[in-house]
Picture 1 (tube, rainbow, N blue to C red):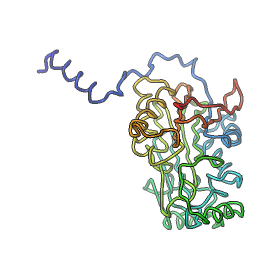
Picture 2 (cartoon, helix red, strand yellow):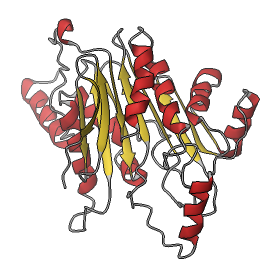
Picture 3 (tube, rainbow, N blue to C red):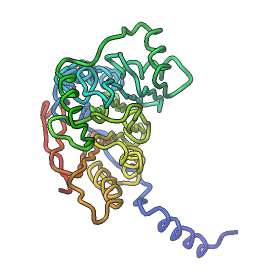
Length: 326
């Protein structure tokens, strides 16, 4: 039989091995009257229009899953958004390849990666979730699945994106981390009036990436994670760095252990920055947004150019500046 001393030794070991553990009590005393819902939060300036579409569903009492899918379809179809869907800048070979994932309150999830010719990869991802026993389909398989379910094959390379790509080809200088005038993924999280969470994430990826590159956006646990008992998180920025720390899942686990959404995002960014040590940390961007079960939200980024959109009944739809390290 374990003694009290042995138990305390084990507890000390666990605290050292898992330093992110703060508390296993997830605000169990939180009053239901204090829960703010519905709420929708998304990344970047194009999140404002995306939020409007999502809010139309949420204000009518709709499901968070439906809201996030409808919301992110707005930038997917907007040719002015150069980092998502139609109008997205291509890879170095001139192909617009798309990644997306979606997750609901029951931990159901679906994803597509390296998908070409389909304007709304988020809807294909949802069908992967609902119609197959799998979580992710990629490349030609994802395209075949989309076409068999009624999606139409389209040319997603707009004249503007093609012009930018051909200009880049003159020097072929590969700076995939350069976010000037491009920005990145649309990630969206929602809490509906029934207290359920869902999230969606969709992107055309880093501009002029190597053909076949896939980032964090379609990876459950990296670009997006939802736990209906705790909260949800999504990422934007350089996907390789997000994958290394299982970013969205890490944010949710911090929230599970009692940290606020903002602190959870900040601590996950700190884990990413540790890898860079004495290197210049201002030439790379990663940001997280998070929403917990109580309608509390938070964000944090490496550099100060990250903005996010927030829509609540009390404050309307706003574009806000995120806190950052630099």
